[in-house]
Image (cartoon, rainbow, N blue to C red; front, side, top):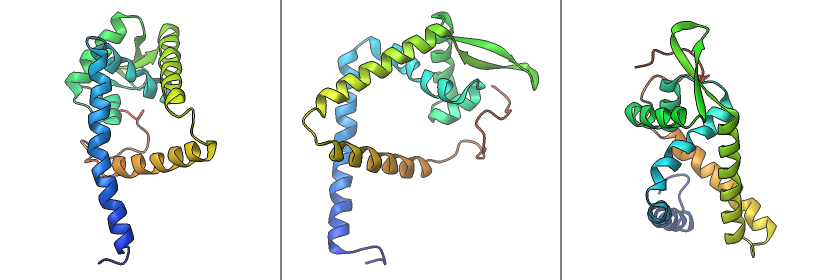
Length: 167
C-alpha cells in the first residue's frame, strides 16, 4: 500500500472506478435519445468556452475541448452557417481569424443552460441542498483531476486565446 492507501480508500477508489463507465454509458444513452439533434448539440456545446473566454482561434478551441481539429472545424462551420458564431480578423495576425459568439449564439447558449438546469433540477429535486453542494464541489474536483491528466496535443499555454497557427 502506498502512503495514501488504506483498505477503505482503496475500496472507495475501486467503487469510483466502477461508476465512471456507468456514467459514460448513461451520458451516451442521453445523447442517443437526441438522435439527429446530437450533431447540432455537439456544435452548440462549443458556444460555452467561446462565451466564457471570448474570441478564440479555432485551433485554441480544439485544444480546449480536446477534440480533433477537423471535427471542430465542421461544428464551427455549422455554427457560422446558423448565425451563432462569426469569424473576425485576428488583430495580432491578419491571416488568422477568431471566433465570436453572436447575439443569437448567446440566446442559444442560454436556452441550453436553462434546459440542462431544468433537467438536473428535476433529477435532484428531492436531494438536500448540502448533498447537491457536496456533489458539485467534488465532481468539479474530479473533473479538474481528470482534465489535468489529459495528454496535451500541443505545449500548454497559460492563455488559450494566445496566438497559434490555425490549420
